[in-house]
Length: 360
Image 1 (spheres, rainbow, N blue to C red):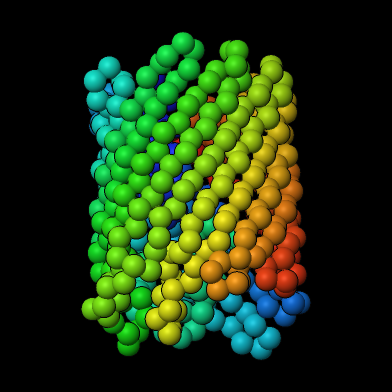
Image 2 (cartoon, rainbow, N blue to C red):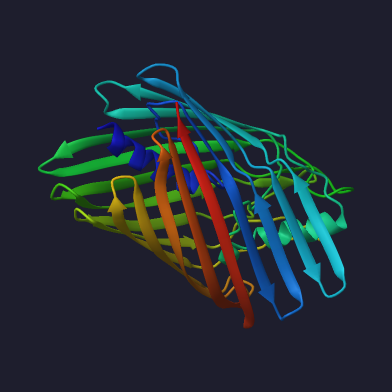
């Protein structure tokens, strides 16, 4: 049942946390790291690069209580014609705890995000920060630093006639920080999320699962003024795993309906987002007990926001490899090439990811 609780906890985390949530229960100590390089080019003379080294530590204190810590040192650079700007540093440090409740029917999470990332950005750093938050680009690190965030969530699941049904509730309280040097303090509004979902086994190796969720956003505070810059978000997802002895195919479809969610520009104005649809798929061919070849694809289709901008379409494909070098060390290497358009502007991009998971 713990695996099903993890599914619903991660479903909720996708709506509650801004990036890379740490909410599931890990039963063995593990350290995850790697290197990710991503580049996007627009109009032949404008490039956006990001190099990321994620650091993630899981430690189960007992069979029912675990702690996880995460930070992501990042270098981001925006080059436009003869001008370049960069933003470098650690991100905020995320610390999460997880408790299994009852007969493995509920999972309780508490988390805090400590402000270890850069804030009070100068003009050049602000330009970089604005670019890496672009949803169609899906940069590995989409923000660096903010105030102290405190979060909590509860996920529960039960079995019924071959189905696993579950739900989750969670919330986040954001602290204040100075996003741009010389401007006032900014405090994002609180968030409350609800979700319900299902997990349906299809034989011994395959399954399908999905969920629907809603997130409510409270009033933001910028420079002492409160405003309802964000409206509610409705979230749908459907995922599946189809496997045989040698082959495994997995897919994930997500759709987000959200009127507005602010990123404070130098003018103090928010940027809104329209409807967002994401699809990703992976095909794995098991070569032997310890290694598999991978092929993956991504598709993103985003609608215009209330200001008539933000329309985007991105498609990408790429190969990969996953395997065990020595029994406790798992390695995965994946690359993608992508093309698309954002507001009519052609973009080309790609990424290379090398990941390591060491279980103690």
